Length: 303
Image (cartoon, rainbow, N blue to C red; front, side):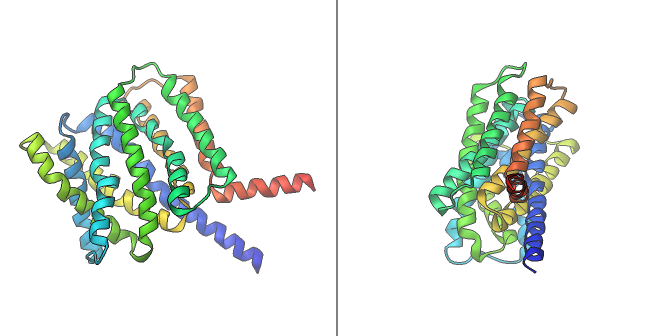
């Protein structure tokens, strides 16, 4: 019975990991869509149009308003996870190749592990720490060995987005035990949209002119890359450790690199290809079901 229970737990963990993986894969596609189809020079409107419709849609589905401390928690998390984050990602996507913009965010596992350790007391497992270092090695191969010049401002925007979102994700895990993922995601997105609206009007004037292609691109980013992705991500944070979820986030740069190479004509060197494979190894090694299997194999070899 105990063996069956452990097997069921591993199955559920794997299922939650697969659900969570929807988020970084969807986010990896947003860099390509933003760079190729969204108007340049409108980061605040881009973030606003991405956040507010998604939040309204989720609120209609959740039918639950924030109560008590969740009024200010929604604002804090909305700014960290969506508002400022979307603006910075928009800037990075416009200034950097798709493959580079997405790879910078792969340092997220390390940031999330350290923040979760400090704020939640969740000390990372040895396998997670090794997996994070492997992931960083893969990122270095992707970022430092390409043939294209790297825009410093774009990298700074990506790093800032990484730090803010990592803090927001850990705080979301700390605060979200009393509310469902659908409701909290809706509140955060609406808070982000409301805070972005006046800034967009003041700094960028009228909204950008948009044709059918632009509307479709915004629709994809808002519904798939935001509403669906964040619900999957925050659901994963409720059921998995922050370090585990952070490592799943490494699928973000892998998706971005593959799209940049296959669809945007960005050249992927041999070292960068190795970097993608190294990152995938880091994702697998950091998952409890995989690291547990390694422990059993090591014990079997010692016996």
